[in-house]
Structure formats: structure tokens, C-alpha cells
Amino acid sequence: MARRKIPRRLVIFLGAGASAPYGYPLTTTLLSRIWDGLRRPDGPGGWKRWAGMKHGAKLRHGDARRLETLLKALLPGLETRTKLDSGVSIVDVISLLDQMLAEGRSPHIDISVRELLAARQVLNKAINGVLQGRCKRKYAERLSSWILRVATEHRGSRVSVVSTNYDTTTERPLFKYLIQHGVSIGKVVDLGMPWRDASRSWIHVRPGQARLAFLKLHGSLNWLRCELCGHITMNVSQRIASLDNWETRSPREYNVCWCGGLLRGILVTPSVVRDVRDANLLGIWVAALEDLRFADEWIFVGYSLPTEDIAIRSLLLRAWHARRRKNLRVRVIQFEDLKAAVPSEAYKRYRLFFPSFALKETNYRRDGLEAFVDGLDAPSKSKLHARIRQTFGGRTSSEMLRREKQRKLIESERNRAQRTRR
Image 1 (cartoon, rainbow, N blue to C red):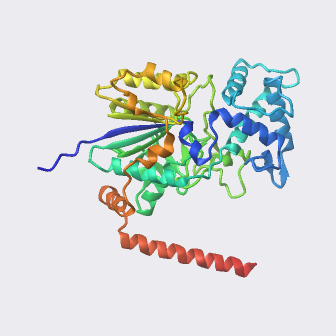
Image 2 (cartoon, one colour; image 1 turned 180 degrees about the vertical axis):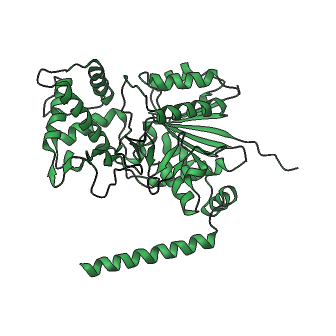
Image 3 (cartoon, rainbow, N blue to C red; image 1 turned 90 degrees about the vertical axis):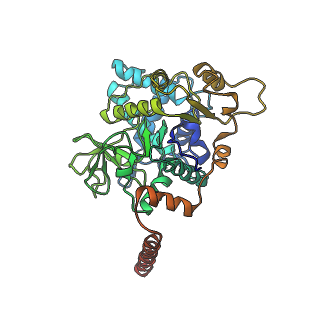
């Protein structure tokens, strides 16, 4: 007798440690990278390479000086030759800054509240500038294919990726798989909010009974919010957060919504004074709570459950106590010293947060994301194609092959035309 497949509802919670293997900096190293970029402007991570630090052909030296002045005001012991380490966190700096802006106060007699707000905007440019990752994309592709396999195993299955990260490393390969098969992201992926497509004026509403969900709690590098209509515009293929740095309409109106309003960034920066008021983000938090309530399993990857993350700890606590199913399985994937004699602070926090029947000792892994992904039962490309085709529809193998040949032909003709013009 064939074994009946049981619907699986899974939540994968991604923290900063889940993006570190791809080259993205951890929260603890963001400030040091920004400071190094200010000290060495012509280097690989220098401020001259940050998006938004140019106006036409001119560099914004004033913005760099403004940010350096701000950091020295918030950290009086900081000098130009000082090399920052992980002992000083970007969370401390942003929390101080947000608290002063909330009070309408300034940290220094030479910095007005208006200049403080301007420096805060430059700090956002700096964070966007240092958030670059280029390494080990194969792990993201393998993780995405495994997510698709789990989501398509049974009609009632659902995989929700809840992330505190801005980068799109995990979802981009998954979106690419679906787009290659002619599957609409807006029809099959739940983002926890209605959103506007960057390439057309459509507004996608949340799909009912979606197998896949990507819930970005703090915003994303491929999102911008319209000042006029309030909708989030998303580019499913690339990051567009740097378009926020245009103070007016760009020459080709890349930073303009289909309704005519200007598009602005929507990144909730790390701070203990976080105040999430945007209706889109609030909807995502509600959707995350619901998925956590009904999930069979929570997998935390690269998230250390820090004490300053009060909002997320509150979210997890409410989801835990509002659960209908009591047999929750919790897994934690961290990268820690396997030979350490003393348990890590993250381990202690998880042990206090979850009872032993949910988080078993063997389910707290210290070998990191790469070992976790290597152990996943990811399907082959042919099996993945069959699953996508069977579950979501889309193009056949012959149609995909024909489109790929057409794409290569168009690309070769474009390259030939460029060489001719030169």
C-alpha cells in the first residue's frame, strides 16, 4: 500500500549569518566596513564606489564628510586612524541616532537637527554601499531547489522564508527557476503584501493557498516604496534600492512609480528604537505570525536570537503561545566554534526560549549554513523541472530550449552590433 503524503508547513527563518557565506557582512561588521570606506575612499569598498555618492560626474565629498563628522560626534573617542572592530556595533550608532531624532535633539553644538537627519540619510547610503555579496552562489541555488521540492510535495504543503536580511540571495535563484518556466511570481509566491511589478503597471495581490512565501521583515534591496500611492515596487531580477539616492526624477524615470510618484527606499535599519509603521511591512509581520502559528517546523539559519531584537522575540513568543499544533519541531543552524568548552550565548538564549521537546539537543547544529545545505536532499534539474511543471504549469522542456536558443541569438547579435559601433 502506497504511503500517504502528509502536507508539510515549514518556516525557514534567516538571520544575518545566513547571508555571510555569500560575502555579505554581518551586522557586527557593518560599522567597521563603513568606517574603512570613509578612511580609504579609493579602495575596493571606498565611499566613492557607494551608490548615491555621485551627482552627475561629481563626487559627494560633502556627504562623506557629513557622515564622518556624525560618527565622531556619536563616538568621541573615534579618530581618523582608529580601526574599528566588532566591539562597536552599527546597532548602537543607529539607536543613538534614532533616539536623538525622536527627541528632536542633537549630539553636538556644530550639528543641527536638520544636518543630523541628512547624515542619517547618508548612513543609509553607506549601508547599501557595503551590502555586497558575490561568493558561493551554488549554495543559494541548492537551497532554493530544496525549498521548491518541499513546497511541491503535497497539495497542502507550504514553505515560508521569513528573513531579517535585505539581500535577495535566497529568493533570486528560486524566482529565476519559476520565471524560466513561464510561471508568474505574483500568482504563486506570497510576499505578505500587495506589490507593483517594476516592469509593468500591474499590482499583484497576495495569492490564496500559495505554496511559497518570502516575508522580508525589514525590507529588501529589490524594493522601493512610492511616495504617492504607497505601493511597494519590486524588481524580481535585481536590486533597485540605490535608485532611492536620486533626489529628483532620474533621466529615464527609473525611480518613478507607474502612478507618477517618486520611489523611495524601505529598509528598516538595525536599531533598538525600531518603529515599523509602514502598512506594507506591518502586513508582512502579520503574515509571518500566521505562518509561524501553523507551521510543523521552524528552522533558524544564521539567527542568534539577540536580546536587542525585541520585536522579533515578541513575534516568536506570540506565535509560540498561539499555536494550534503542539508538536512543533525547532532546528537551529549556527556557525560556532565546535571545540569551544563553554556554550555560546546564542545557545543559552535558544535553550531558555524553547523547551527541550521542541528544540532537541541534536537539532542545534554549529557547522553553519554550508554544511546544512550540503546535507539537503535537493532534486536534480530534470526532477525540479517536472515538479514545477506539474504544480505551477508553465513552459515545456522544448519551449524552454527554444526560448534559450532565441535568447542566445539575440545576445550574440547585440554583441556583434556593439563591436561594429566601436
